Length: 330
Image (cartoon, rainbow, N blue to C red; front, side, top):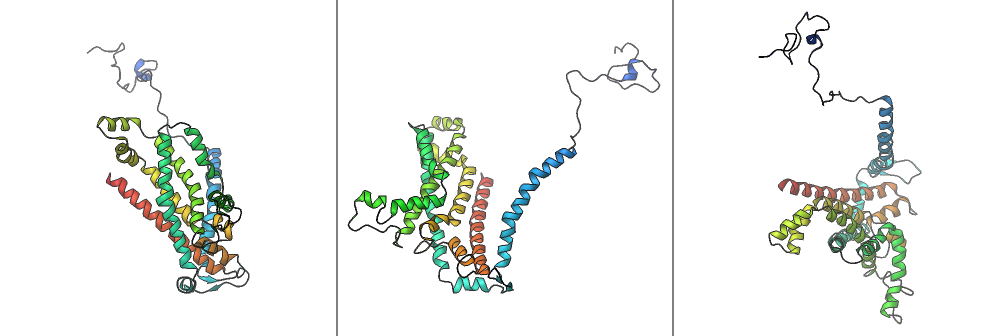
């Protein structure tokens, strides 16, 4: 075995007592082309201060603005308080009154469920259909995309004012279009019609939101999947439902949660039309009427808010659990 000049074999550690300046005393040279491995980077005080500001302030605002009032509403729902006098503990009496002796509660709850069904079963699939059509590259797709998304930038209160201009009895655009001037239909005054008209207006806005979300998901689908399905003989419809749609599962989760939130928190559009009365009652309107109405009942209004919160969490958690189980089964 050839030895290194000086009697040492390359790669071996020097023996004790090697004279200074001997090649073995310096040890083997590090391999060329490799950088020395660095240890974990330590955060400086400046880094910690920046992280504290960037993370601490949003968390603090979230606790103060969202979680604080939410927990306070839960506590106040077991009390009787008018906002000025003393707070008295009443236990579950507010909830008992709400479910048994408050006639406006159950119609409002049914209206919220109708909102959820309408947005989830009509507006959301329609938004998916529009996204699929635009994704196919139809002519003027950029124009359609902008026009359909435009209502999303409007608040629901503005959408409510637009609904008044369209569905008004005397000067509404709808009655003018259908030529019903002698006996105009009171689209917003008739309790049997006004809720459906408001649902159409809300769906007009919700459809554009869903379309953009699904369009972003469709743009991210790998074209190789579609090509493979076409090679296997699948039609465009089969490819969409069996290949493309399952890959949009994360988008389904986002759209589902947004739909539940939009349906159960609806307030400003009905309040802008007729303050949420005469067939447009919603749970959010009842909360407002009881807390800041003529007879301020903050404890009772907080009980309605807690019920609305439980409705929202129930639907959202159930939807997320089903999606997670479906993801595990794949």
